[in-house]
Length: 270
Ligand code: FES
Picture 1 (tube, protein in one colour):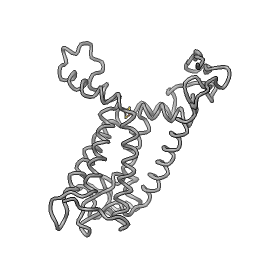
Picture 2 (tube, rainbow, N blue to C red):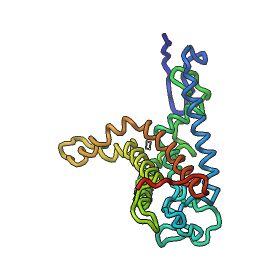
Picture 3 (cartoon, protein in one colour):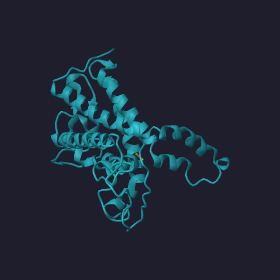
Picture 4 (cartoon, helix red, strand yellow):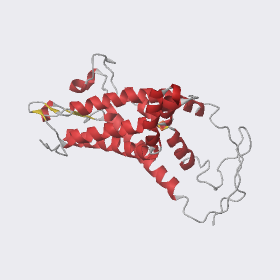
């Protein structure tokens, strides 16, 4: 049986934890290794994709209207047919993905679940329950840069805007220029992507707090209570939504990229 140690955590103090690295005999290291592997792969791929500045849109030439979530909304003149709305950053010479990436990236980076994961996996602070901490002192999230984690609720609002935009993209994917209304595999990919991102946002801790936080009596706030009842079970699945939406948003970019480059065919279902 694993021995349980009492770990004192104190701001500005010396970190607690077991006197030895750990007495755990199980494979506690698997979770941090898997986390590091997936997050590192995602960071490398998304950085590469964001700088590509091509193959992010499948347009009328292929009878499709599919845009990668990494590039939506596309706000530079260089976006061409993928351009969103009237506003433009003009002749922005770099990849248009770089104009918007801070919002979804900031939302993920400051997420309470991901914080727990990457503090454990990358910082080893601590890497797992009842395993020695790799650091001697603890300053919490009280100083720069970690104090920026407090911006999570604002990134949450930005995330909702992006979800609405990606839902709009999914609806547009039903349009097949030159053919008409229909469904392709790409349509389904964009729908699943938007759905998972809504699941990720609505299961967010900030969302649950927004619905039911700082309420002394739900009796006086029946509408907030209703929302709180809806998001609470989603909140219990936040970790699942976090991983599923992360992997699928990358897959959606891969899908659009390969169709746009001609490597894959976007099959029409009807
Ligand atoms: S806590 Fe994870 S997105 Fe808000």
